[in-house]
Amino acid sequence: MQTNFSLISLGCARTLVDSEAMVQSIQSVGFTMVPEGTKEDVTVLNTCSFIQAAIEETEDNIQLLIDRKNKNEIKYVCVVGCYPSRFKESQLKEKYPDVDLWCSTKDEATLHKRMAEMVFNRKFTPETPKRYTKISPSHYAYLKISEGCDNWCTFCTIPKIRGKHTSKSIESIRHDAQLQMAMGAKELVMIAEDTTAWGEDIYGKPCLETLIEGLADLDAWIRLMYIFPSRVTDRLIDAMANTPNIIPYIDIPIQHVNSTMLSQMNRRHDKAFLETIIKKMKAAIPNLAIRTTFICGFPGETDDHVTEICDFLDEFQIDHIGCFTYSPERETRANKMDGQVPLDVAKQRLDRIMTHHHHQRGERQLKRLGDTIQVLYEGNRHCRSVYEAPDVDNCIILNQAPTSTNPGDFITVKLTGVSGIDFTAEVVG
Ligand code: SF4
Image 1 (spheres, protein in one colour):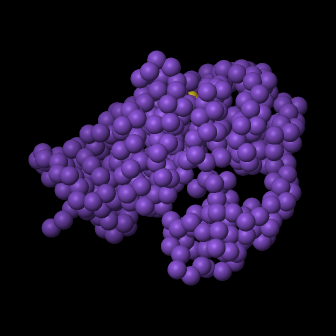
Image 2: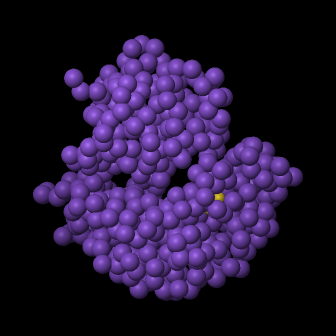
Image 3: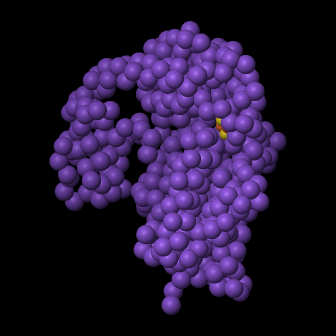
């Protein structure tokens, strides 16, 4: 009889990439993947824990799995990833004695062997899985180019959870890209904790441009995410602008624009530097779409600092933004700083920034109506162009489902309207 497992992936795209790798290795030792909730033998929960809200979501999910185990709906519960990396295993075992296996990010490579030993009571010789099982859509894929982070932003727990920055080799990244393209990926979304740190541990200096040039022959859109501003150089901008498969979109989480806040966050640049690189990127890359994120309520922040963010949005017309309230995390330096901002004030500032952005963005969207653009069809009338990233940005919704078009096909559409934050469109080719 086959032994089944399911996997639940919480958190960001980086965790999703790890989850997909786990699925292959778990299958290689004799388990069969089934959807969650189908009386599986083992459920693996891949977790997030970088802020308190993520910890709470993880703990809610652990409790749900323990409840299912107590009802005999599953036999084993395995909790892996960031949550067990942040806490001592002895504490976790005491808190959740019904969890059968804890596995931190640094031990993820051995998860499948430990599961085999736990369930089958004997060692298994790994076989090559017969076929790669994707748990994300086939028409795009996340390409994780490095692990860990050495930046130590003062609010962030990730360097502690994920460890030192380690780049994958160009050969390994090309192999991952070609595997995903063979399964239908038309778009490769390059991710890491900080993509611009790529190469530092291999070549002695960060050189994302070398990687970009090393992937230039791949016939897919390549979308760059998680750009760390202080590592943007003229050479990198040049490579982004002149490599045809690098699409005109960047995700550059800037977190703040005020120089004092940036210094307190240990972001290693000031406002003038930020403005300079954004101007250079916009000048070098026609119609560049920019996505960024802001933290509201960092210690010492004032209303004037928030006005600076709104003025920055006016000047640079940022296309997509995400805003988060600052989360005080006990292991971080920011947690010990003076001037902690009450959560309700941080929330008001977040609302102020998002309202400002949505007003601006709505005006810009109206100016684009009538444009004809190429889009990637995602199914169920949804599409994206180069200007929208999967999972995080708005999308383009077709007025009518196209005939003979499958997810992953490129089609040409005309933007006809706006619905909420999305565009509506009609197929023209
Ligand atoms: S660059 Fe990102 S992952 Fe690294 S410390 Fe800063 S916020 Fe955290």
